Image (cartoon, rainbow, N blue to C red; front, side, top):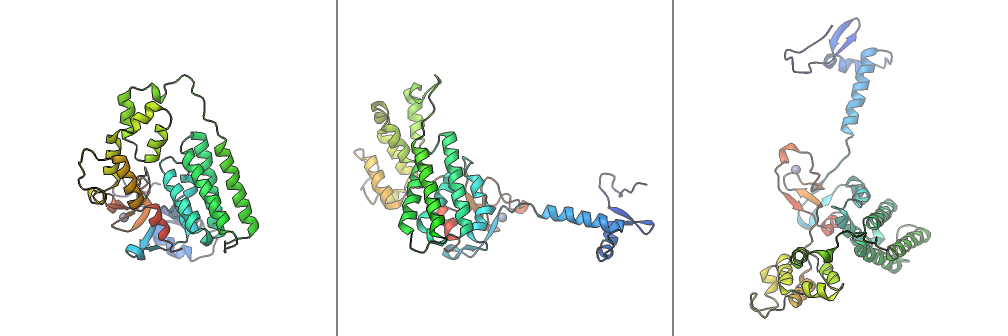
Length: 328
Ligand SMILES: [Zn+2]
């Protein structure tokens, strides 16, 4: 016998056979759940259904709600839980998130190394390993990773004996691991080009276009140090003018010059002065953001599954802002 609702396209009610008659699951649910009759068929079905329902509720958490405003902002989880919820270790192998993760690790290990719990340390050093293996396999960001490893080593050495959480033996192993990884990165030999098109094979206009889209001055400087042709291209004033306007406001630039559109203006020199004074604007392909409606902290590209907030504005959470949420 089939049971259908009035609407043929609807799934209808769920029914169970109880004490010789068919009854709606919703009607018998309460009474059956209170019984301990494990042999009772409705009870078994309902328990199974409830177990399935609880599985649905166990969907991995992907966001954490932020309380408070401005500097008083905080989240209710500890650092290690947050690192797990935001899948920091897995994110290290995602090219869109790796730079953001790298910066979080740099801040944690440089400024808060003495506050890291054993669990947080385990996640962080596993993440460092993932960052290195991803950089080695993709041959991208190797210099950035090498600098990160050097900074971590220096931080561990400088903090030893000053209240690090965990035994000296554990930190000795962390240091050894970081040193080994740094050696591995330094010894890496880039894959030989097998006759495919290389950067220098591109026309000058294309090269210039690529260089003018780089937002990190270190990439431009390193590229320019390859040969005299690239040096000339990377020292074009227009490239540094674009970089200045990208990273700094006119008001910031006016601190060092009288007239911004002065033709004799040395943009590279202005860039150096402004970057020392104001720091640089960082862009990440994916990063943690906060929904301004419900204050859920989540990965920008992943969203936070709240239908009513689909078009909601999000606020960028810089790596330093993320670390500050824990008031370490
Ligand atoms: Zn929201």
